[in-house]
Image (cartoon, rainbow, N blue to C red; front, side, top):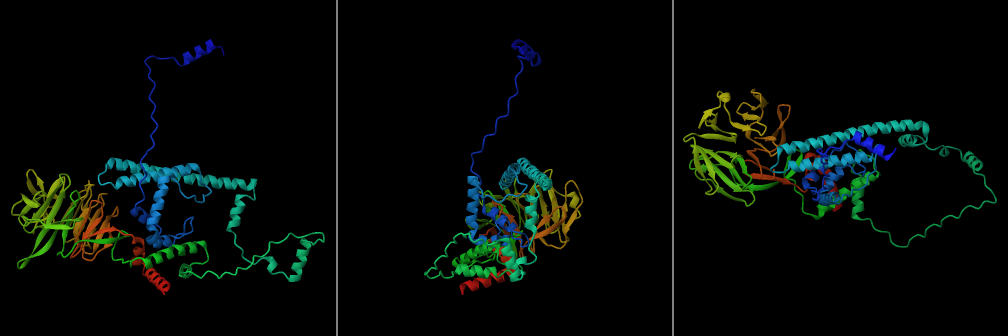
Length: 553
């Protein structure tokens, strides 16, 4: 085409406009320079606990999950450093790829893992944006869904390709897959033939030739004159451990790998101090107990002021000839405690998160804690005996002995109309604005926007209702700790504690609870997986003790 004609066509099809501004292109995202977050002890412990099932097949390494659970006592810190180094360097051991694997699926998997870690790390923050939290979780959910869909499509496509290849290559991958499933059901034919017949067949198939010279064979190695290496304790322990399985076939690489891990764990236990499993199993995870305060009389109403590290609680004391209540505050890290003066018969405690204030209740009214003077100042309801306090959007209190619930409205405390004919022992409103209350009859829940009370349980004695930073509601009862089992309108037990009296969470969301005489904090345990197996499986404990005694002797 002539240049003039070409220019005329282009100018006609794409006329230039002086006032037109092309849209700005979206800039390329800048790669993050931040170092990846290392694997924490909690993440490693949770991963190991997911492997503790005895009825699942091992992974590509051939090591069953139970072996990892028991060996994590000795190898846990080394594994954590190894996984953190893999994340930091971006290098991971190559596993055998499945037949449907592709680079696109690998990229989707990396995106899903990155979205999961970003969402989990954001949820662990003490102060977080709930909108961003929901956005990150939705991003992770969509990435996970895309990965599942891609894997399903890849499996269907791979199966179709394998079926199509039957005609093209009958001795290819389909044949090898079928051969891999076959097992010999009888001895070879040559083992059942008569020697004379076998010799005749061989001589016919492979006739001897006079001119043929067979190749020289490799000479046999000269026997060593050195003394053999003695059997080590590790070899003996490995042999013993291979015999402990009663229902599985021996002589496999899986058994050898498991034995090595268990042997390392046992010798680690022999060389280190004696492991004592006297902690608590909370929601299927073993925790060590850290004693915070001792020699108390039934510590009730545990409330944590997270910014100061002060733990407020009420407990019974002897006041002359009768028992009374006293509110005490303790710094859980410094282990210093002091009694709060100015609140006669102090029992009720509440935290106002909106204003960062602590309110206290006693025999003659409501008080406000003064962090400067470390004492209480009178606030309201003079002469009223306060049984319970709660602050969220509104100010509530329970009057004793009528057990009536009151709320602050129009510059005064008025009875709650919905509960005017109901006795209330404990009252709580969650972050999701669900209402919980209990009395001597049962534990109830009122969901928003419904106004009907639902019975969650009528078999427990509630002593405190709290929630963690994630908005999960927990119930401290006389026989342990329960959590709401949504959406079934019931509660399930997550910890067995004899005579539990109070429950709260510290600034790191670690559980703080009280029994009849003391207050404890639950901390992650280095021997958590091992102690969990020992406490939940008596047979496992007997086996480990028997093997340990054998190795020592």
